[in-house]
Amino acid sequence: MNSTADGLPHLSKIACYGIASLFGNSATKEKSLHAGIAMRKRSVFANCQASATLTKPNKYTVQAGEEKHIVPSPAFLQYLNHHCNPNIFFDTEKMELISLHNIAIGDELTIFYPSTEWRMSNTFQCFCESPACIRHIRGAAYLSKEILEKYRFTNFIREKLRTANLQPAIKKSSFKKVV
Image 1: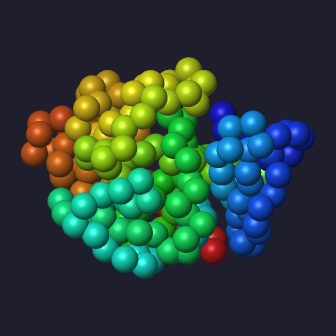
Image 2: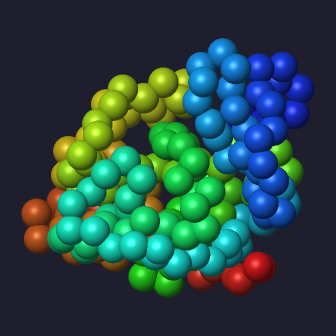
């Protein structure tokens, strides 16, 4: 699923934040956030806040409303990379990061960017190598109903999908708070 920091020679630890560590990749020059603690599926991995709220998105913001783009705090959350088989969900109403799978220490922490973004300001080609990879990451507005049914979305994105008549079947899940 997601890569682990253990045993990868091109990754080196840059900083440790207790629940997560920041790694740099000497081959790609990219940074990634990896679990510093093990988590069970459906657990709250971390609580966060908005250090700033902007009316326009950028590559460090998370969409929480039509013209509400938050800069998450703690700042190391900006290093949550995209993956088409993510292990973290960002609940922008409760301001919680929730584990979607069991997470082992060292696993890269990833989110599905369209789960929080309607139309992304910085689109890109995905190379996550997941069998479920959707390739071009542009936001939830561009996903088919078939793809939408595979993911969990924020309340804002679910409402946008509902008004666009693209609402997937949504299952409510209970999450236990661990942190």
